[in-house]
Length: 320
Image (cartoon, rainbow, N blue to C red):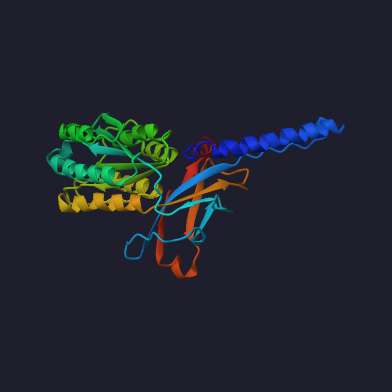
């Protein structure tokens, strides 16, 4: 998978080396090399970032490895890596909608974003980093991954609202730089929910987020309460992207409510479990997108706890 160095590569190499030794032994003993059985096994390490909440929405951070069960394409897997409150570094791509419809709210949004970034960079892993994007009918990377708060604040202060909304393009393009980075990948999208000018389709954005193994948090700042005049289709699309990647959707008002949303996201990121497993015994006809299910095993907790994680992974990510 690439996020734990070359562990999966080392596993594959050890298997190949074992086969080579078997062939050499066969040759030394006079057995025909052609008769020696050759097996090739490639083990893929799949990571799942998991949040668990109770029926009241409170985060649960005291579970153990044995409390979880993972199935990949319907086949139960063995969890070999488990971390409470994982400190694996965060790479967060922050996407700010600067289309014309958001113009009057931008100053309130950026103020909340600045508070979030300050708390994130002050309290977290010293390798946590943030990239900043603005999108209207174009998508602009304002800042590549950095821990420089002043640089982030300066770019936020220059934002102004105009033109259309390329939401799907923004998710698609922001996903690419996340892919090779070590650690956990997160997108935070602040928008009013519409998409009017994207070249990429919804399916392209969703696949890109999965390929980047990104958890997507969507913050819908919608000044129109009634459905009339709102882009509810875009809002539902964002909800699908978020829930499919293990994230959440928020619909706050501005000010303190928006501040609370960012605080909730930060709390989520600080109370996540890391579960990883070597994908084994998968069916030969497994689809390109492997559905993965993470469940609570304890009977006394199964009904009261709710797991949030990505719905699966593309075969491409497991081969890296």
